[in-house]
Image 1 (cartoon, rainbow, N blue to C red):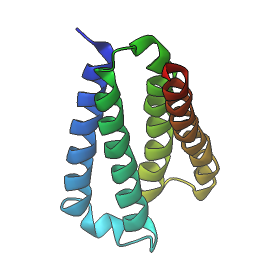
Image 2 (tube, helix red, strand yellow):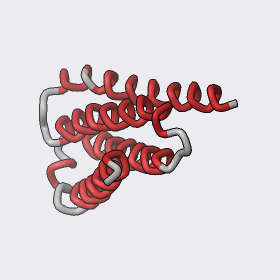
Image 3 (cartoon, rainbow, N blue to C red):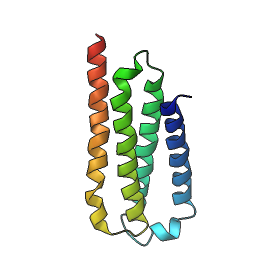
Image 4 (cartoon, rainbow, N blue to C red):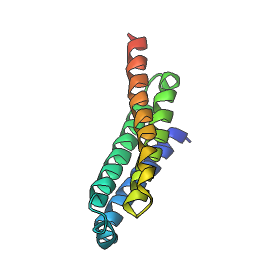
Length: 121
């Protein structure tokens, strides 16, 4: 079993599930904090986007050079999205200071992808 592909599948399923949960079951909860709905939507979008990215490069002909990109995306999407989900549900806003760590890891993943593409040429 390809662990990265399985992780991408899990990330995608969780993103869709949490997106639907937020849009329906959490509607009254997310209405309490003015920014909550936007945070939830952003968290879901970034999680799903990086699930697709991990899945797309998993079938690459040179997976070793892309491992750092995949690990960065997975950890970054988890950190970023989980902090936004938590704040949407009422966690302290100081938790927002953690979200940039996840965002930075996602950016680093894209840089690793760029580096991998450059190494192939």
